[in-house]
Length: 280
Ligand code: COA
Ligand code: MG
Image (cartoon, rainbow, N blue to C red):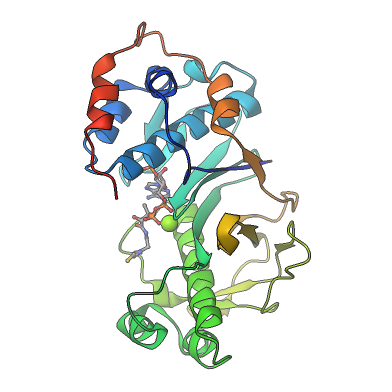
């Protein structure tokens, strides 16, 4: 299987990088990206599209431009292929990540785990606001295990990411009743001394019943610059190897992508539009 991420936070695209990247993805996706108001959102969405093509090219050993990437009615990207291959993308905070497998379906989600910026609201008010999305045990896991506010936020994000990874595995999108899912976390804390640690002992109950053992949840912390931490969670078949994510650079991804036939030459307009977007 394949697990890749890129830290997009400090990527300041050059004109050449941006224009080459825009040639490697479809017009439909470009037009979607072009509508974002903020540079950050456009940058993360473009990196996501490139990462999808990079991954497909690596896994299926064809040029990145040879794939027709479609979306389901619910927006989930996929390819039609005789070799069954599934992938899923997630972007949040500093990272864009992707995982792909030949063994069953995959759901991927990422979120902040520990950040330096001061939260806008307390963990109590956030958890209470979203009270309906959590089971009683999950609620206790967030608020009643520790007094440490940072750890309580981390627990909140860990559970949220688990729920999202399952919903994304399903391909469902918004509307799934998240409180039907009860995640039983066995290993409460990650080991800071083992930066490549992948926890896979978290279990899921749906409607109070433990699910089929064949599904596994792999959780990993990415230790970012500035002492920040971000979690990546995968929902996948237990036939997959348990392995850590690999970090890629934007140059590596661009080198692995080829322009689509429909985008024969640079179109300056995409760069002009990107430069005109607001900075966050
Ligand atoms: N299922 C799986 N993956 C999907 C998807 C779906 N239905 N729809 C889109 N995706 C993929 C896409 O690649 C998308 O990125 P792209 O649009 O740039 O290609 C990516 O997942 C987005 O994932 P992520 O970056 O983790 O964003 P998110 O966590 O905000 O959104 C969704 C994930 C799309 C599944 C989300 O909209 C959602 O429906 N969540 C369900 C849970 C819920 O109700 N949450 C409430 C939040 S308050
Ligand atoms: Mg997400």
